[in-house]
Image 1 (cartoon, helix red, strand yellow):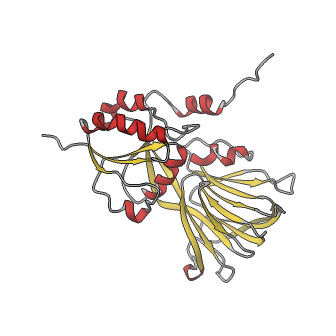
Image 2 (cartoon, helix red, strand yellow):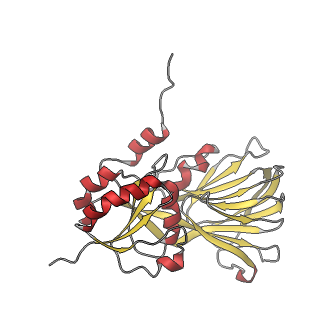
Image 3 (cartoon, helix red, strand yellow):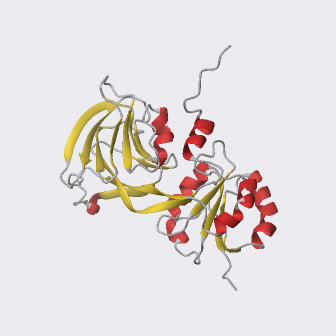
Length: 301
């Protein structure tokens, strides 16, 4: 007899529609798989996720935000992630409940298309740290650390005056200062995150298969500072030359850290990636056109 398909259920039970749907889904799912873990995701962290029994799939019920949070928790596990959308957009969480049931045999049989998505490691160092370099990170002065799937954003915050940032790009371990600029902040995004805040700030859409990072300034005091795309093997260092009282580092729009003048933020590729399972009836460009209205013609009349 074949071993049962093992599922970790990660449901945003703060949404009534999720709890109702999970109640309806559970008998159907238990006939086809064994639920090996169903933690309270409001208190879940990577350490807790590391204690999950061995599983074949993480089933995330919520929206894109729920999937982003669980991707950070699951980063060190070789566990494919399938998102069922109960949110507003559903760009990363591609499945609806009926899609999950319709395509279950393909999912459990490993026949659905998957993609490995780049994760970022984001670190904050205090003013006494040596210059950030990929081959020399001064962990004695580490103030905070997080993973990101979409983006890391340095934002000016209250009282909403411009801040000054030094931006450096570190492709081979020898840091090269690129520029100092004044503005409302900077976004460092993965290809997955290129359609999030990066896109709203005027950054490029980057296909998820492209191994790249997007660096997009937020309202820079410059006519010539345009968004750039760099190799994902590069590290990016941002030194806060002048901060506001409310200047923050925000990761995936969910995790925030207070920044002070002369703090440094270092962003680089994480050693692991996250594997997403894709809906067989969709592709990236179809989703981009449907959800983001990419290349849509202006409405007439």
